[in-house]
Each structure stands twice: as structure tokens, then as C-alpha cells.
Image 1 (cartoon, rainbow, N blue to C red):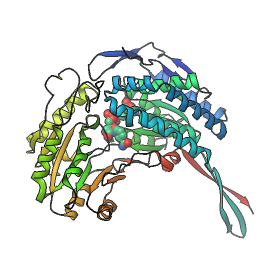
Image 2 (cartoon, helix red, strand yellow; image 1 turned 180 degrees about the vertical axis):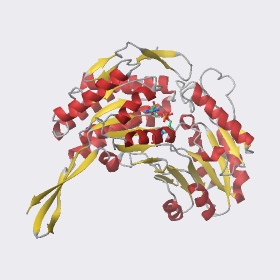
Image 3 (cartoon, protein in one colour; image 1 turned 135 degrees about the horizontal axis):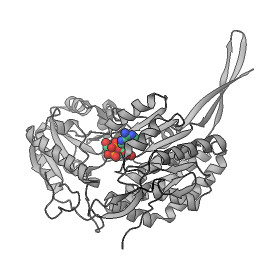
Image 4 (cartoon, rainbow, N blue to C red; image 1 turned 180 degrees about the horizontal axis):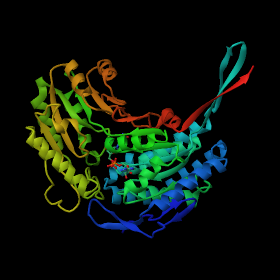
Length: 487
Ligand code: NAD
């Protein structure tokens, strides 16, 4: 049965098409077939959305009526869960993620995490008295108030669209902000369905939440970054676009929150069990490597380097690849032709720079239709090669040998990125000691997983600014006001 998606945007409380009437095709990356048409916004649509969000923030009690927001967010949570099956089918069709991932971190996981933020909102302390202080003979009581930060522009990528859309809009709305969501052009349905649920299942006032879809991200996306009526940019995407957005937002000194790229290391220490720690490298095939926090650099001690490379090669042989609808499919396609060509170009670059291609490296036989790339393993990689330095965002793992623990830490930290890392050791204490030395926002130790509604996620260095999820993720959408009352 053909999957249906919502082609309309959601602006100022109404489901709508672009004012120009323009639409663009939504493409299934597994088949290259068109699965529907989506509204293709122009500047006039974005102008309406920003104006509506500003009006709703300034002209309603959305930001101050905490109990009403709890009620509305519970309605939104129930509404999204009611369309869970439809959403799953849409994610498989437009993202190309296999069902197993969709029923996990792509779709079901994020739906289950909404509850955490609403509970946090219900118990949040909006005001506190920090103390009293005397200045030039006059004493003041200091009150510290937390307030919603204002109008939020949420700009999101295509790789985990449901998860990332919800990780932004739920805390932003919970904090009392109003939102304009601009999803990636490749995954519009994962955003437009939220607009439809808000329209049909909630009392969320007009203008509080808006979705604007566009085939040209720069045209309408940059309006969000420069418009003085927008207070916060919450962006997830590539480091290059993040830099550009930060520069654009500086003219009006917006609060800018960035979740960017990564080139994370998996450090297998010399006392780790090789068999189980190397299994974790199959993560590079997870969603065809299109995950920002996936460990794409494997760091192995020189003493067991060849044994480790051979083991990973064997593990890659277990990966099934193809139609993401198929039961137990492990790996699907990349999102689009451009991304497929980009990944294949990196593979060529790796070969040209002298890395040893152990397995993979091309388009899998029989999967010429769709945007597939084989699980690819490179050995004899040095950390200065392009394939070790740049984010490939595909199923490509590079294996780098190291001398000792100190050398492993040095190589792991020798990157412009600092998103995530993994450490394996026979001793948790030793692995935790290494984790302390890593300049990354998350570290998975001995098979632990950072994912959870309570766990702040984000990057050091050029992997970002700020944190998503958890208490820190909620506070990104707050301002702090100090009020001094003469004592
Ligand atoms: P991208 O940077 O190309 O696009 C991200 C979003 O920005 C999209 O909505 C896009 O339409 C929009 N955009 C592009 N140019 C813009 C402009 N000039 N003005 C305003 N908006 C603009 O990223 P992508 O290709 O969609 O996603 C892959 C990237 O996202 C990878 O680099 C990955 O590491 C990163 N990512 C990071 C995290 C994280 O949490 N750190 C999570 C997922 C993905």
C-alpha cells in the first residue's frame, strides 16, 4: 500500500499550501520513486510564520500559563502516539531507515521520551530567591526568574528527523517559547505530520507552532537567521552550515544553539575483549552511517591491529542491505544521490591517499536503484588522511593503529570535532579515566549508550554549542531575569 504523507505546512493555526502554489516532490531514497508532493514555501510563507510566532509569543499567555502548556503537550504526545503506525511508514518511506531502527531511535524512542520533558515542566521551579546584598548602604533582595526565551527557529536535518524535530520543539514549547520548524527538504513529512497533529489533536493556540517546508533551504532558512523577531536559533546539521548560521545570527545577536558534525573515535584499550568491543563498530552501518555520533574512527593497539581488522571485516559480512521495508533488514540507502556521490568520492580519496580498502567501497550489486553504498572498511589509515579528518556521513569505518593509551587519547582528540567517543577496557575505572581525558560531549564506556531523555547531548569544539535533551536541553529555551527589590 502506498504511504500517504501530509503535504501541507502549518502556519498560524492552519494547514496550508505555499502562497505561490508551488510544490516539490518527496523522494523515497530506497526506490528513487516520488512518494508525494510537498508545499514549497517562499519568503512570503516564512514571513507569515515568523509574524504568527511573534504574535503568539507577545499576545497570548502561552509563555506564562504553565498548566495550560502541560495540558497541550499531553494532547500533542497522545496525538503523535495515535498516528504512530502512519509515522513509522512515513519514516521508512522518506528517510530510508529500516523498520528495526524506526521502531527504535528513529520514531518510537522519541515518542516515548516526550513524557520526561512534560514531567520536568510540571515540577520546574520558575522563581527563586538567590540572597540579599548591600550596595552603598542599601540592601536588596535578589529574585531570579526563569522565562521563555521567545520565538525559536528550529532548523533540522534529514538523518533522524522525528527524533531531532521532537528534541527541539518539545522542550521549546514546554519552556513557553513559540516555534517555527524548518525541516530538511528531504524529510518534510516527519515535520508536517506534527503540524497536522497540533491542528487536529491539541488546543495549542494559533501561531505557537508553525512548520514551513521548502526545497531551497537557503531562501527561507536564512530569513529565520536574520529576522529580528526570532530570538533563538536551534540548529542541527553540518558544521559548515552551522558556521554560516552563526554568522548570520550575529547581526541581531540571537541565542544560537548548534548540534553539528562529528568524527568520533572508538578506543579499544589493550586489555579489552576484542570480539565484543569490535562488534560495536557495526554502528557504522546503523542507518547507513548517517548518524552524527557514530564512531567512525576505530583506534586499535598495534599488537592486535591485523587481528582486529580481520574481525571487523568478518562482522561487516553479516550486514544485510536493501529494501528498508524488509523484515530484519539492517542497512538501507543513503538519503539522496548527492550524499551517495559524496560518500563514494570520499572512498576514492581514501584509496588515493594510500589507505588499504579491506572490504566494500562501491554500490552493492543488485542495488543500483536507490542510493546505496556498501559497508566499507579502510585499514592502514593515519589520522591526517582526509577520511580520518572529515565527516563522511556514510557507512565507512577507518582503522588507525596506536602505540599506547596516551597515543590513543592524543589521536582521538586530534580532530576539529568533539561530539562523541567510545572506550573499551576490562576495567571500567581505566575506561572512565580515559573518558575524562576526551574532549567530547558524550562517551560510551564498555557498551553503555548515552541516549535517553535525561541525558544531555551535544558537542565540544566544532561539534556544536549547547546541549539537547535533559535539564540542559530544556534550559536552552529559557532566559534568566534578576529582579532586585529593596529590602
Ligand atoms: P545540513 O547542514 O545540510 O542541513 C541542516 C538543515 O539546515 C536543513 O534543514 C537544511 O535545509 C538547513 N539549511 C541548509 N542551508 C541553510 C542555510 N543557508 N540557511 C538556513 N538553513 C539552511 O545538514 P544535513 O545534510 O541535513 O544533515 C547532516 C548533518 O547533520 C551532518 O553533518 C551531521 O553530523 C549533522 N547532525 C548533527 C547532529 C548532532 O546532534 N550533532 C545530529 C544529526 C545530524
